Length: 196
Figure 1 (cartoon, one colour):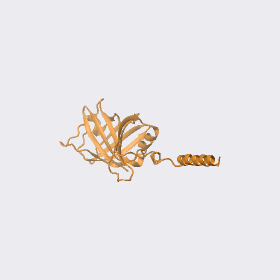
Figure 2 (cartoon, rainbow, N blue to C red; figure 1 turned 180 degrees about the vertical axis):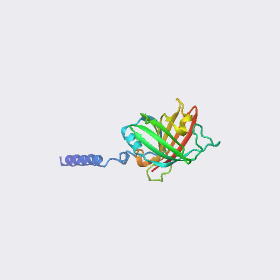
Figure 3 (cartoon, rainbow, N blue to C red; figure 1 turned 90 degrees about the vertical axis):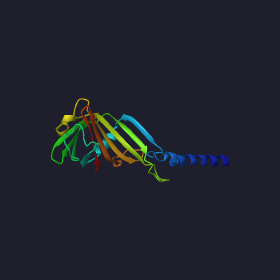
Figure 4 (cartoon, rainbow, N blue to C red; figure 1 turned 45 degrees about the vertical axis):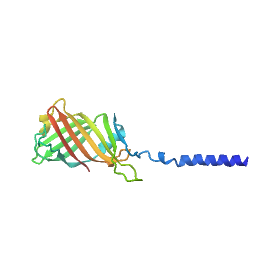
């Protein structure tokens, strides 16, 4: 009888310890596995929208220089631009100003869905957590004025790619750089820059 009580007590203690201190496999919900690669389209949940809206764009942006030196749909020859962004109820206005003072605004609405991409960056050292390169891609119709007006047609789209590194869970601190592409029958250009 005493042996049965001791065995029962030990089993209960083991069960309690396993609940209090779960196995290492379950200890880190945000940890990624080596070799992780994922790409999926999904609805932007409220947490991700909060992250996206909290990102602060640096005030300088560069336009990608193509091999032939032309960016279709932009009537400015500058390489560097001053950037300010205003956001209101999911509508974003990206205001660009070139070195000569010429301006233009690209306007788009935050889409309902985004493309999530994660890939093992292979930067981790043995015994250290896996570091993922990650992107959140936002795409939708865009309107534009000023230096962008010439390239805007009904089929023109904007793709904003938020780029970062971190673990399996997203946080605002993960995202350090961005890339913005504008594509259409009369537009083909992209800007890039950093977050503060």
